[in-house]
Length: 631
Image (cartoon, rainbow, N blue to C red; front, side):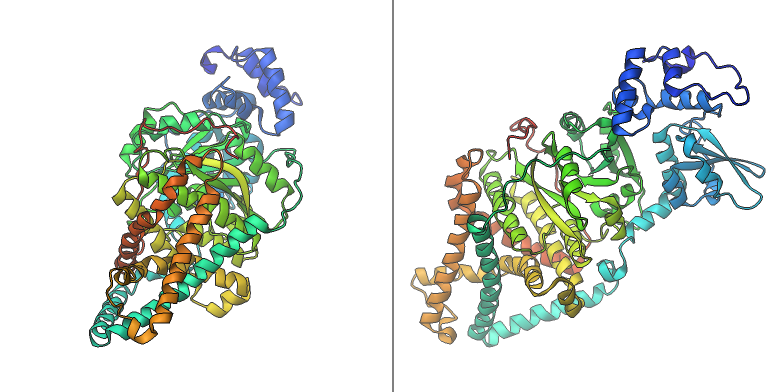
């Protein structure tokens, strides 16, 4: 790639009334592109409605530096390099963080009453001039677009980081739990002591009460699973519609990819996302790093990023380091009207964004979110990965679609999510303190009158296949479910009024009953005593017929899970997993350990984020070709 400044002949001084040299003609004259490149780019500009420079950069014809140089010469405005000559911290007082973000500008130098403002879009600078206070004048200078983002972060990073942590209103956030830790610990200790005393004084009655609680929560989960299975198998399906048409003009899409201590993921991620068919001039992939994460920073430094990738580094603040906080911070730097989220190890289908855009274009106005399907490319690694894949095939392909057909609230997954930006910002983004920010956001969307649609587009990622990392990941999810339930049950009557009785019961089932089932699992294991000829402790209070009924109910629940799993993996791509359905009861024993770990952290460290390590499978299994065949 040649340097524009070495090959550009500066234009003659503009005469009054003479228009500036067109941007594309400057690039042709500089020898950076030829006439055919310009014609093709102009056709793309008419079709996509984006600046010519963005199209040529996305095509790899020029760089962002060339764009800045050409704009400088076209508008006869000074060109600066914010990386080599950054603004003084004192310049932050001239423009607020939100104004800098809104207009993508950075105050750079002060010359008396004149403030030089760095911009990458001089045509839109008129709105910035109006922000100048009395007696002050704002004049533009040209900088690269990526340097603008970094300059805003350098000037206003700490304040934006605090805003990211506190974005959601306190009434909808769990951050108020930062106070009262001693009370939670004391309350939990008192409850454990009370249960211990009751178990010693009245063991039969204590176990009976706990068994009844386990029965009630199990009844909720079994009912929901049965109805979901019925809805998927027997409900009348809407007539098959023709594929959604792509809107014109196409919207810009920004996808956030949070990274933390990723050693090898960057190269593979770039290769997978490079296959996406959505126009790259309208696509912005934002890699989100934490400030102290030297591992990921070094990984990216060794990687040649495509021009449609941006890197945003989140400043540290109050020792809070969670995925939702990073997403909130990076959201302000996004350019798109549709905001997506992928995980670091994700391999989406190549037409996924095209389908999301088309779905939003034809969906009702209250559809705020589109959720895709997750699948796992390393199912054959070991028995845990096989069971993990079966479990989530059941969730994504049977239960969740059934929940959607029943009209209940969809708890979002942490990836393959796409939002309308204006609605996401209206809801103040993600709760930075909630370790299952996705499930919480799904409930908040419903409470504010918005809807989530499921879209049959698949993203492949790595199944967690090691026992202790599996327990840590699942404990974070279960802890987040319990936190989310507590947050939204602060005012049960208000929640009931906003979502209705059916969806209210759905929240109790998806969050409280799910957590309770894992906690109460050891009580169900006690039924094995009867198989060994030992009298069950609850037989004296419940009676033999009632105890037998409970036993058969829990056997039915296990059989139901296996039926759902068989339906979920009965297709061509997952049929090899059918024999492993029998291992699910042993697999879910790990969930009980995760639940007790989650309960402990719920009391002592509710905001602790137990990170899942990516890229562990290595070369043993790789994502399938990123085609649409998985549908």
